[in-house]
Image: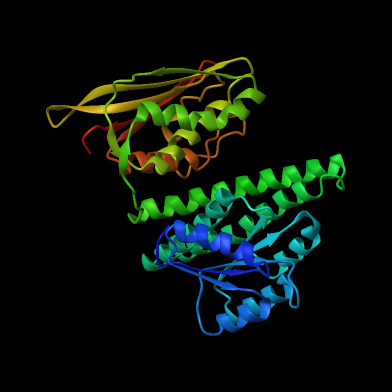
Length: 364
């Protein structure tokens, strides 16, 4: 991540601190400090500011919970990741009350550590960007809702792992249902924030060389479990000769997954969803311009002619619940594609299915 971020490791095990410090320095973090106790950490915090603190729950003297309470008083804007073991699950839950952002379990997996740190740092930069562009207050409030949601999701994951032999099957089902609900809320908030940025013209595209013939199947593979649970087949027709384009792969993932999720949701068991990628040409100001087109077709319930013209709108007419509803997802897809100077279309017939296509210019 960015080299200017500062991390403080608080743990009474010297070997653990050295291991984490060496790893983070290898990941280009220039400032990685250590504290062997809660009291030492608080003394350091009186003199220095940090973006992230890795805090062990179980320490001699002042434990992690009491240290976290004091950190919230001294450095309220610093994000704290608690490091815990299975035996510390009740303590970890207690930490939620005092603003712990994430949880890590011992023994520590380095890839999980850097993933959580990068996620937090990206979130901090995103909020800073929203403030700089003076985004409207409701959007900023929605973005801030992501913090407690992230903490709750992390805590539920920890509970599921640490209380395997304690919770009943019914309680486990309830935890899984809560987890799925939180993910849906988080996804909706993300869409709302992204919509606001694109509509205001302040969305940032991080363009990289992208091979769509490789990217599209890789993204679709992320929905293997959903496809398997409904026994839906995924058929690919990928042109391996499509040229490389400059695009934002993270934003394109949102587009592809939004379209694919709708196709899965409204497809019948034992049906097939077809995904194609090919090169097309469109006339623009008298010239034939090459585009890479991606299409996703299902054989589901379809969309009525009355609804079809509005599916890429953020605000849609109030049709019956029986109509195919797409929420904010396709509105965001349209904005992302158009930000890449592309276009998106939809075709559908009731009872026969829907095809959604988007095309991106080869030369932006």
